[in-house]
Image (cartoon, rainbow, N blue to C red; front, side):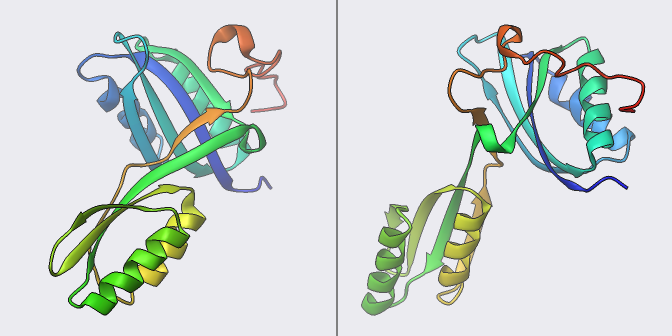
Amino acid sequence: MNEVKRHTLAVLVDNEAGVLSRVARLFSGKGYNIESLAVGTTHDPAVSRITIELIADERSARLVSMQLRKLICVHSVKRLDPERSIRRELVLFKVSAPSHEARNEIIQIANIFRASIIDVSTGTITLAVIGDESKAEAIQNLLGEFGILELVRTGMVALERGQYTIDEQTKEKGEFDYGKNVL
């Protein structure tokens, strides 16, 4: 039985209306749950990059990668190796800070986690944190004691380290070679 784990897909698509909907329908139609989704234009304004994270076994991850490649609007799909990838998410926290002491403690927590303080009022502090799930979870646990009023996450974005890119020229031979015994 295949082990279920987190898979990160980098997908280059046409930057036009309806593309994200087509990609999302592929996942929902096959019963896959998207754990995280982040979309933005690339250095080429005609192309967007979608970073998708899903929890699946190896077979399912390969199958969804192949199905994505069949969509006309998709230029490239690459499953990112966690050992060769950098993954980051932006999380904004609005925290209750009714007293001077509470604000000071929250500022100390922000400094420890290298969070940015992006707004301060008499009753709240808003922080921005960039990192992986463990960093976001750790600061969330500490800030929870003060009362998190709002929290918003961007979804995970990821790039491969070093010379590796999503471009066809840097793909490893056999990366999308789906032999009979794989499926």
